[in-house]
Image 1 (cartoon, chains in turn red, purple):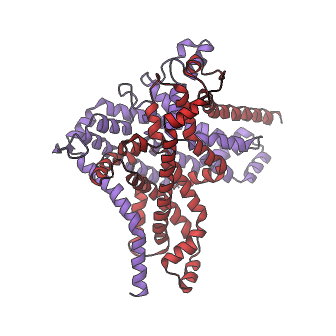
Image 2 (cartoon, helix red, strand yellow; image 1 turned 45 degrees about the vertical axis):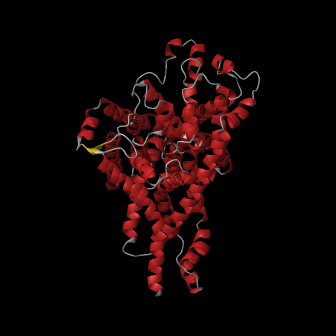
Image 3 (cartoon, chains in turn red, cyan; image 1 turned 90 degrees about the vertical axis):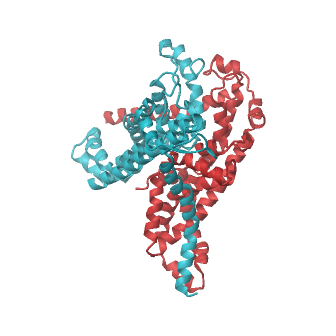
Length: 275
Length: 292
């Protein structure tokens, strides 16, 4: 009996220890976001003596984080819509039809999951230049969509295969064309997997870094990751607003996470563990 | 148009958007990366390209920085197995146990996974800042002045620091992989083991770990294939520096191409990453399957 108790204590201690290790850096960042340079450089460990909420106003309006966050949300929302739409169209065929080309196309998409993104960055910047897509959002959204597509199609095809095809047949008899079957029957039944794919795509596009670095040049188009890179290594600036910018940029994702944390965890797991 | 042809036409139309994106932004860039790796060129648009054969590959293979970047990738892999795996396993054990506050722990541990890597990277850059950063402030206040070094400015130490931040981010994610495995083990097996007189350590050693083979496999595949894809964290924390000491293959590719304007050499690195990545993915998946 005593042995079990000791192991429970060890477990509890470690559980709290790792909670602190996880949350404390976020807390320090938050506290620093309310300080001036003197207090940050003096003792990062200490609590702020006066709360400088002005740092947040400066981050939002002077450093233009409100624009960056808006840009990121916009990119994330459009990417998500594109991934779901294009993905569902393809997944429906791959799950339901038995033409000779279905299997090879599916294998092609699977191969896409394995391709290292960074191999493509130089050619993609060249393609962007030749398509007049440099420094435009539509280019970025198409690239984001492509890199989320393989995984989305994999997840959606698997899910639709699990939906009984009798539903399709019944709808076809009722006079539905293929578009009708997909949008009236399959889409509503696939809500769980659409939610999963949406979360993965949204989080990816909100935070994406490398393509925004190589494809965007106008600072007013920068999403959050690109804007944050701007601050790196600059210790002469006022640090408070920089810390405030970090907090502000993670806030949308934290809110999404706290609202839907089980769905988020489940979804991101499904995305990574593709077998 | 007959019903059958109609179905075929619609099927093709449904596949066209996905296939187009795939061909234009994935297959096409890969083919171009391979072709352009045999050329020398100094700019994205309009710069003249000279065919140089395998010279780019030779100069990559001869470059010490390239091998250093592979070594640094290896650090990520080793860190994964030595630090992340045991850590994630213990966290999984915690969140599937019956201690108080399990829901809070599970939610908290996962938070770093959600955040933009750049934001997390920047946060840690400031925590590790040598003069006023949190870590060195703490070290100095407890009298360990000699340990308060320049974490991101010292060779090798900087790579290890970033590897550890990487484990900090992904502990919560890998926790879920192991938690899924732990939940899948039926409790009757433990009960019968207790009846047979097994203690906690023995049931962990002879039941839990062998029955979680699947989780360990998934972890191994993600860890090995993931280490070549490291970019965002290194880019936002050190940018590959100082003096290229913390380059990983992807940051080296970026720096060769977009900082030094050696686009051909950058592509050669890209092709090496591609071949290594595909070989690792396919090889590992084959090895794991044949074991079953």
